[in-house]
Image 1 (cartoon, helix red, strand yellow):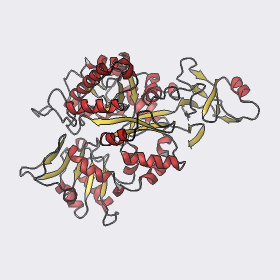
Image 2 (cartoon, helix red, strand yellow):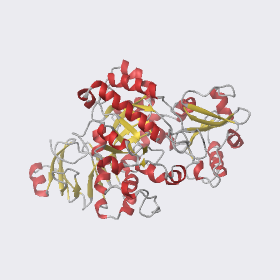
Image 3 (spheres, helix red, strand yellow):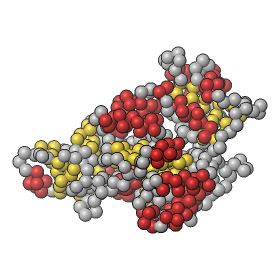
Image 4 (cartoon, one colour):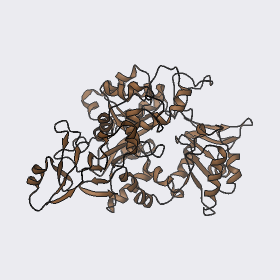
Length: 530
């Protein structure tokens, strides 16, 4: 088999044994040699293809360890309320979008953030009814933990004054007990059944159309956190030879029994499509006032958030999943939720012993707010902290207002790494933009795009560039049990890499957010090129 020599490049391998190189020989989907030009050409032989990278910087392919790809691609065809500065502006966008829909179509989309409106009111069904009276509408908030629906949707979903709040959820009500149109956490599940249904379009076609956007920002692997419809869509793409990047697909908690009956285990599959952990929600989100906190929310006595999965049930699910060879990825944002998850993992570890425990890599998704004493507990238990750096910077207005003065280790990736934990970075797209260099910028500066606050929020938690890139490469590979295959550029590893016109190691931290990708290679094949 002839090979390809990628040459005239500044290659950052992230391999401590040889951190820098000028050329790389690829044969098939594997790296054969990484080193100097003469070495690679000599190993390649006379018939090898040569690609001149014109002095570009090369990095291992980036891995997004927490991304909702079905929600992301569907949203690109739906109404987008991000960036709206008022309820009226949001309603105007909704009205324009509704005008172009078929008469029987649901109005879907959303990503509104009332905290950023000049008058931060909670929207209601009456507001939505003004511009969308004749068709059902379901619009998730920016964090995805609240859905805003209109009267037609409430009727379709069977939600009325007599509908009780489900366990782990809340139907917001007015003074007469009527639903206001705001559904939180588990109460939103019936609306999400619509959001994730064919009402939202042909998912296979949407993934085929929009996955190149992920390649274009340097992603070669993703850990997908969406549902079984997304798994089926990826299986279809793979069978048709149309899967352009690698997918580690988690299992929703609602499909755990199906997974066990089917004999699935974490790590099953191949280098393109593999089975991940089961995702279990233990709380909500800060913006929706549903993440589970030790102290109540300011001005809301007695409101600590929502325990979406109570502790006893979570412990049962961990034992059930782990007993079948399925790791757990627990969504936990508040400090009380993180503490509960860590203590459950610790008890499970003690019950099965170190040998069994070492075979499963449990995770915490988000890991946003920890009690300082829980940082070493997480590291010592071998738990992977799956974190999204841009949440830190996007949440600055929220955390400064809602969590000021609390004894918390918030977005504490430096402290976790120093304690010996594995920290895998992602985006949580479409909550945030999937561009991993936005995440690198946030991890290194802890500043918003405009450079505020000076020095960054909690600057002692900043990372250097090398550490931030490792969280987007080798840590993601470790989280999917593939550290022997990807995350570094060295002989024998998969030929997943990207080339950038500007070297990340030669720009100011403030400019990391502006980096662009010129070439994305997955499995030795150019999958995207600018």
